[in-house]
Image (tube, rainbow, N blue to C red; front, top):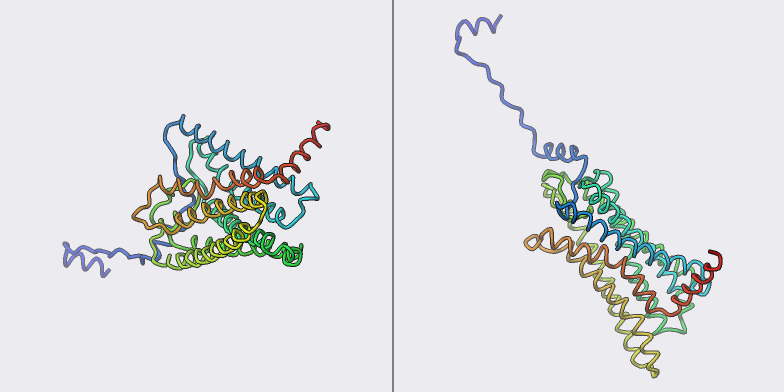
Length: 338
């Protein structure tokens, strides 16, 4: 009745309703919750080059699968290789095999089927597992440098310092530390509101690429975690360098040239792998945004995610006569049964 009277008194009167403004934080959370999938990097739009990428990654993956699989099988089957050095090498091969299996098959499938999509949950799982395995691998590499230091510089104490129980505890600590760090990084990364789309400039889900999609200033918490991980990694690297300085000093005092050559052949490739792995990984996570580009990010990620798992079996098997002899013995032992 009141509305009729108002209309009669003032027919030009119009009723307007102000739009309800949603707070910015709520908009961010809404956008984040609406993301059901991410779009991974497309190497090329040309079908022939997509298939070339598929075959290239397949070759790398099969090489890593074969090399690491042979190392795992040989060490597990040969009783003479049940020593601390080969125990840690077995752990390294398992981590290499796992890390490359997390990223490469999905990228290959996307190229083969001409798609970019990975589900939200799949991306979170991939990021968690990859971070877990990569960090655990670096800690295992650190332990391997300690193993070589004790073997060369303190050979009389080798059995005491690196007994079977100590080796298991050190390996378990490396795996557990990697798991805890990956859990914290994944939880923090995917708790951030994402409002800058869902396209990643990478062929797998990587923490820096997810952070680029965040419109929140609270990503400093994840940046702090990355900085802590980098400091821990740098501490491990300093430990590795100090260990190898002591190793090289001891090696140079060996009167036998053959003994020096054997020690250098064992240690130098390990140091080269660690340097490549750490330098590219740190650059991927700490490079300034001004020099970031999809091409550079892709090259760096290949250097620390694909090259070590494929190259490590060659480095640790081709330069290790004992492992080559055990592998040949294993292969010739199976030949009559075929």
